[in-house]
Amino acid sequence: LDCQSLAYDPNATKLSPINDSNLDSQGTPIPAPTTLAPTAPLICPPQHTGPLPHNLCKDYYCCVNGVPCYPTIPCPESTIYDEKSMLCLPTAGVTCSQSPSPTHPPTQ
Image 1 (cartoon, rainbow, N blue to C red):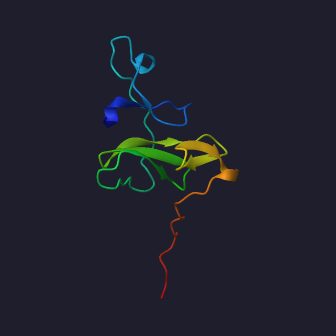
Image 2: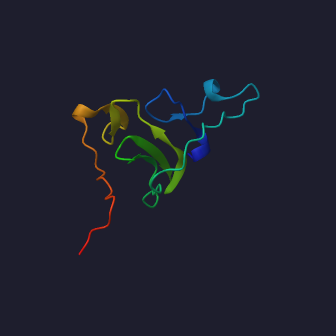
Image 3: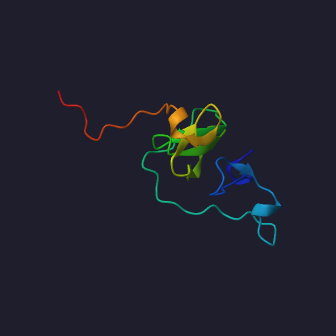
């Protein structure tokens, strides 16, 4: 499994393997839409393969063998990424493991 074997579907809530529906007429994978640069670097634990939350769980991204895949995938409005189910779910039942980043460094 590598980043290129995963397809981005803006209407889906998780990554899906490449299949005939996301290939062009010549069998080439349709590239993912471009997005703005991430607000925080995408970091994967060594050897980790699977999705991880990003941007306070408003999006998620995939890691393959410790390497992040771009772009991040936004969750639909009124949902956040749930790490247990690996889906974007309504915010009411999901706790995000990410903490907000401070906008100003602590003062002493």
